[in-house]
Image: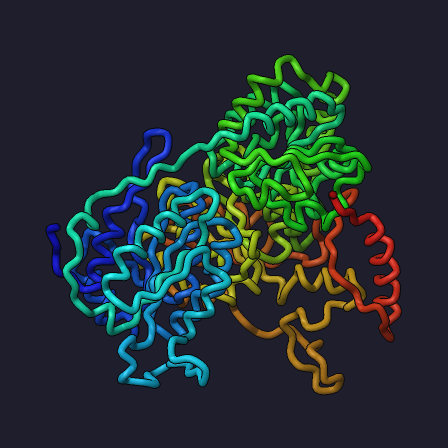
Length: 621
């Protein structure tokens, strides 16, 4: 067997750059390069290997967590068919990646992490930044990645790499099992040379399959749908990852079954399609929640049924409701005791469309759904153009961006009150134009995730919408966007604190405690003084962004026009009225436990309401 002598780090990079994915005859490199920050745990190993491999591009980021967010944002836009590698030193560099690693796994997005590790030979211990354990020497901070990784391994001998790397790829390219893969390589092992099999570095194409469901399960699903009088589809991210949008449209138009969309599934059907009820669940529209409440059959497609999607198990109130779950992941397909159609969304929808025959929900049901679609769009139009207010509302800002953006431009968000308003209000015309990280809702994802989205789709404008809380978490990748020449447009809304959690606090009787950016009041001892004199626009400007300050909707619209002309990352700063958010509709409830006893009357009242809402929660057995 022919061999080639390489260090472990060199061999890893050589292997990764020869891995490709293929689906439906379209082939592409699985890895677009490597994000990272070098330290003593990876500089001499992966740093050296990347330096001598210019065809596997290295990108210097400013924060290790941001690196993983950027990789996830890229993978999301690429429908999980391509991603990035992220490398860090052992210690704080490695643990900085944990939050984003959890986000990638929760959102079912492939990302490969290569954190450095302590010495395998153990002569030098404890090394700088080593976490010692009195019960084991085979222990480092990298153990923290185990619960947030879909695959985790440590390479203590060079030859272990030969069997580990294919397992990494198996997981990353699996539509069912993908998420974060973590390969920990001690710093001494990274630099160690070995005679690796030459065949290990041959080009390998990983075929992404489209599994068909069990035939008998499909027939049972057809009978269940035929018996339904008020069916509804919950369209999740799996619709888009499977590229099943056209198959869904054909199925919906033939049968008349309406859809409601999760955060990840928004854009599965155009916003103005008469069969689209809009956002589902706790942040859902009037029509989506009304139809969900009455539905006798719920067809979940590529959804994991998060608590927001199900309004904390209060959305589906029909006592005889049944679930049919189309999902590539068996774990999700069996949720709510549903009839599991485990397989690819696109092929399953095509088979259902063919085998359902002439099934149709009827004109009365179609008309009711179409009326809900039309009436909701009228509400959106009103929210976009509220008149007579000196300080604009958040919905007006959303409307201005939506009306200005091209259909294929991308709006991106992750946390705060913006996701709920965007879920209800954004008029989506393209399935990749709505980019919400709401599986983990990680503050700080926005700019780094936006950079990943832009790298995946450089021809599209990326509009990142975030509040001051999210911005302060991680503005660092503004610098990386400038370094690499990827222009982002950041809509920075200043609420002087956490508007979303502040509103939630008030709804549970907490009066917004600890959610505002205010001076400590020396008399009361509380954080209820004057607003802090922080100039976030100046901060963005200091990082190199072009900044526009808007004071009202008119100046905001002008700023959008000017920002479009820019070639570098641009920030549009504006303040809004925190209180004016879009109300919930129907069973738009989210279970947030409230103190059973309290001295506060507002908390006491909130608890009474909470007890009543809990009565609507259901088990689906």
